[in-house]
Image 1 (cartoon, one colour):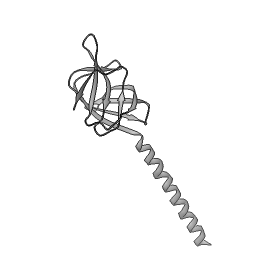
Image 2: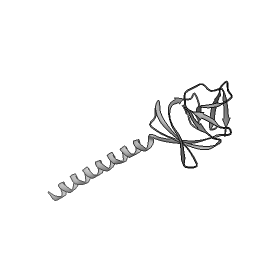
Image 3: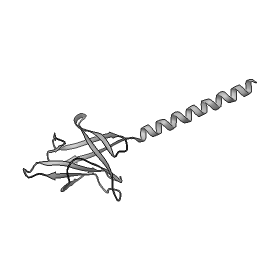
Image 4: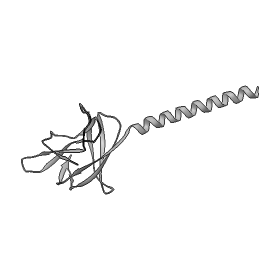
Length: 131
């Protein structure tokens, strides 16, 4: 009888462990991050971004996400973005900038090296900066 109880306890422990690991894998898979570089000041969703190398993070696979953009550990902007599928993997990390009539640049899309997705922000792109 003890042997049967021990087997049942071990089976329940194994099932709990599998469930825990599977849930953790799915949660870890939904957090994304990447880097991009801009050489001139731009804006994204009305937030100014000076030239520099940025880290961008977002949770979820989209299409609609909230992206947090940081520079040297300081949060510069948290903005809505859309995850879009690319026809093929990007060969480099690219920040696409739309230039307005006043000459001010607006960040419109970020592609990530080796990935088949990009983040799009409000507005169309007309120029790119490759890192």
